[in-house]
Length: 287
Image 1 (spheres, rainbow, N blue to C red):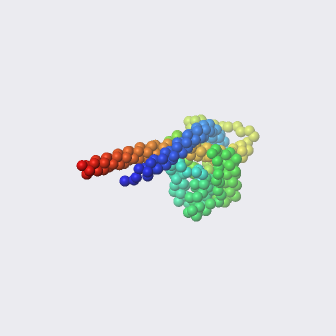
Image 2 (cartoon, rainbow, N blue to C red):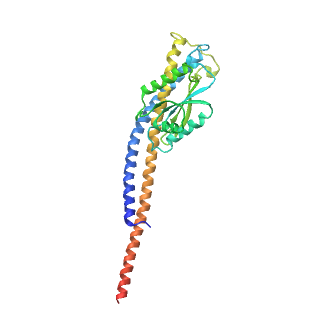
Image 3 (cartoon, rainbow, N blue to C red):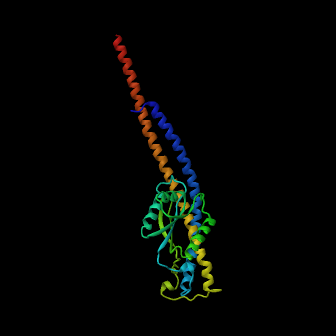
């Protein structure tokens, strides 16, 4: 059995750890609320861009755009988006595992790692990493999304990539973050939802100035917004996962302190009983 001094030291150490995890939980909760508000506010715009792209796509039969060109997927790029820091349960691990499993479908794969966790994992395993982004910060950065979208778009137009995928964690709620793989390029124009076409009819649209000009603006905007939405989803999920992990760590610390306190009390009682027995035994020997 551990000595009383060892038990007290362990209890004191765990109490200090509990203070840290409790503070981290409070900080993550505040960041999570802001990130959740951002991602929920951005989703309507993302849906509207997707809906407009579907409308234009339905009227652009025969119209060509470099980012719409479908090729045989010989060389594929994966943009793996994780956090820079840990202490958020299996959040980063689930994203990395999802990416590693999906990459098995292709022979020639190149990686773009956003986040220190994904970079460290794939670099240790000697994957082909084309570009890396670390130290992104606590909030989603539109300039970073624009830079990344421009990079993969230029690579795709130059036919250096035949397909580009985003791998990140979709924010469902505070307790659930779902790792997903989303095809970014070639752009797949979604079908228009809720329109006359969904009811079996055909809708004629008049575009000003023309469909080609709209696609030239809309498709890069769609790619950029998809990357930015990915960053928003990631930050909301990261802070939520860290808050949940720190709450669980704080609860575990309380349980450990209770168990050690009980062991301490038992050890103290055993020591007191032993001393009493020795005193009684000594007194009986003198008589």
